[in-house]
Length: 358
Ligand code: UD1
Ligand code: UDP
View: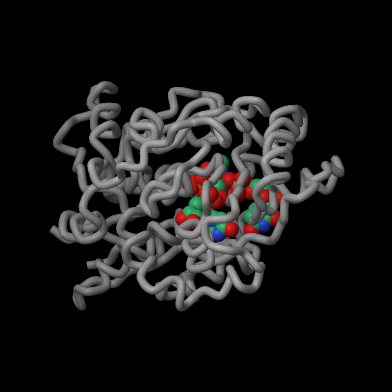
């Protein structure tokens, strides 16, 4: 049996690592990894393959840097060529990026079964490029692996056939458990940056709505709010290349915010675990905050991971300076982590592999 996996962006390398490890336990299965090239810097791509112990991609299509349409179109063309050559029995796609959509479209048109991992997430904000990618992908994939009960409900509300939907839990939770072991021994980032456990805040910003070149108000407001916080607490900001390019252009004053380049996953888990608080617009990082029992400010107006804000493990502030500083100073975060279990049992990868191979 041959399985192909299409990946392209940072969080997809982490998700695919979890599933790939389980699939490769079966000696009769060959997995072919197709990297679209969407993320390409050393510390946005290669470092994850090195650290997470998954084989380097069999194909790197080198497609990046264009508009949504350019990237997606070129990816479909190139992925189709690989699929025609490799003839896999099934294709796995992950998350909601342009690489996900391209992998999906190339596959269904060749009548190859396709499985979507992390299906059913909805922000109900159609201005997000990811929301469109999710809706299209979910409506015609053969297997939909949902991470949460909310995701299952979203799919059933859209009249998607329930036989295609499998609630397996979140592969990112599996990753946090598996790669989170002994992380303090493997990562030296705290001493390198002179950070003391629980005395700093971790910040990430990369969402399109917060880094829009034509409307910089949101990014300015976020950074003003965080700069205010940084007068009391040091802030560490591993900066996404997209955000870095914008900040350089507009010359925003980061004041006491310490900006560094993107870090590998092991360093990131260590930074997360030891943070006093995390502020982020990332889908993955807001959950990792919860996995590692750290309160989280979500720098968005809405979230797909509704369980966190509904239960006060996190708070949604949008991009409003006052809301951000108020959340930092006054919000009563729920610290009763043991009572909640939203994201499965840490065996999502195992369940996905079992169903796919069957
Ligand atoms: C993409 C996904 C987003 C996901 C994020 C994970 C889409 C529509 N968006 O957003 O859902 O949350 O990845 O990080 O697919 N760049 C570099 N080097 C890199 C990668 C990117 O310089 O290695 C710069 C380029 O200028 C590029 C820009 O960042 O044009 C945006 O990259 P892109 O992959 O289009 O979107 P992300 O913001 O990374
Ligand atoms: N991440 C990382 N290094 C960084 C920033 C993020 O390893 O410098 C990891 C993070 O721990 C999480 C994933 O990348 O597992 C999230 O990716 P990102 O925020 O880019 O995308 P999203 O989850 O929003 O799609």
